[in-house]
Length: 128
Image (cartoon, rainbow, N blue to C red; front, top):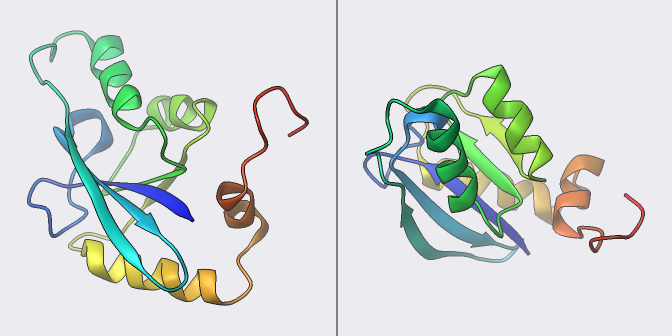
């Protein structure tokens, strides 16, 4: 199973910039099914402090292996990767459903090594 977060403003499209996103829809994905687990909201009251804003979004990704975004800056992408979450930038107007469908197709076949690693993460403290 793969757990993915989708940066979304409307719950339909992957349409939010990671650093400004106030909502992540969290899905559990297998080759056979997708399930919306929850919607996590991020407070936007700390808009002036970039580090706090970014940390709030990283906290919202807890337990996720993948985050799909409309855009993400290089510094934020680096911190997301350090948090062991793989950022995936989508084309404008991409829907969550179409991204879920594409991920399922990949999971049904032979996923690339980076995706296999996300599906079967190494336990903390073990070799990477």
